[in-house]
Length: 217
Image (cartoon, rainbow, N blue to C red):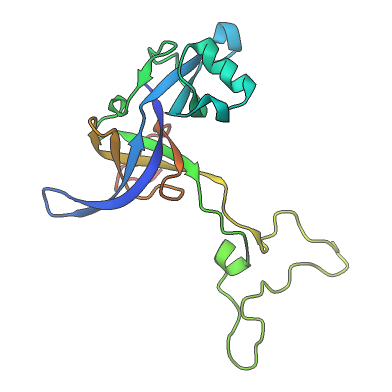
């Protein structure tokens, strides 16, 4: 059954396996979260669960937000996020969701906002190789020609150029859960997670089946 939870990204660390391998892990502070709304096909046209995370004073919320929490009968929280699930996953209004919904060996998808880097050039934004840096070349970091001549006399949509880079939502799929610490509300996942330390992340059961090593497709 699919589950999801909200949390914050922590630091990275290392875990050594029994056979001596060193694995990079990201520590995620996950939950506890509170169910503020359960959507059904009969009432809303689809199944979804809405979670609230990180208690906050009511004065920092808008009036509609305070009314929403009051209707659900739960304490005010800083973040509200919704995820579609197959059914309500056995969750009722006001129920508490903890990191124990995931277990070691399970695969999850982690979504977060990647770091914003402002306006950048094509080498940093798209990984361009760059132009020659010797023999009198003075345009090492420029993209080069971007258009055509008289036909079609325009720049095609989607051309890789300089511009705003980062500050977008990104999802890392099929990250293996290497451990769960229920006492400290921590989840240890293998690999990197998008965003900065302390940034909000959404942890969800993996949607795609993990690829098996040695097999294609």
